[in-house]
Image (cartoon, rainbow, N blue to C red; front, side, top):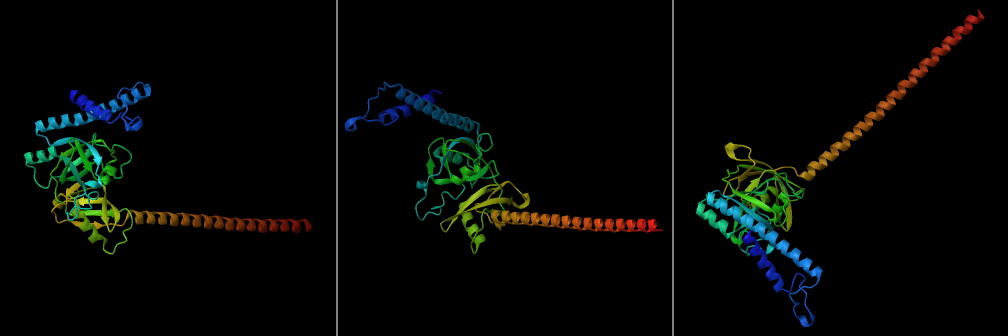
Length: 326
């Protein structure tokens, strides 16, 4: 708690040194005095300090948890998440250039990189990422899975207690900036077959070849997730429908790094929905046609019945008349 307060105090001191919460300045560009006689300014400063304390406590909580797990020899960590910035993109010529937002690799602090080396984890270094509590943090989630598998970005490191994630991964888990996630190391089986279902029609001459080429930027696949690919200045989203891992059969996730994996491209979600709508329309039309025919048949039978009743009545009247004459 003391460390958290010291962090908050440092943040507040920096804020005041910059001219207060509003950055007010007097005439001639002079900085406003630090004394704030107005109640409104005092309230603003109080809110700023309270926010600083809360943020410092969040960071300290993650740091304390990580220190405990490190002492226990358990490779499980907690971090605050932030979206990956395009400014962190590797330079031109690097294999990952232009694919920072279209991969499953996260940027981690230097301390985690050291932990990986100290623990002598087997390559490839792959992890399970989940919101704290194991459920999507908000209804913004764009996938059916509650966890994602991921690899690591090694070119740069994030600030301590933070990890940077591609935006599609944050959307998939319904995460917001500064949400807390749990990171666990896993030894994943190599994938043998992955089934992908495009969200929209892929107007490409060789979509499977494009898919397999873009998969080299991914380290893992998670069943139920919606991953993003970038090709010819266009983004394609695909649902991971199924994952097989050799003798293990169907699995929830697997490694595709340095693995000979086959892919199967299924009919797009858009096409499936179109077929469903067409089938429903045809079913409604068939029901309407059957109802019209049934009503017509019922009317025809009713007419015949009435016609037969009239003929029988006239015959009875004629017989009664003949009887009276006799």
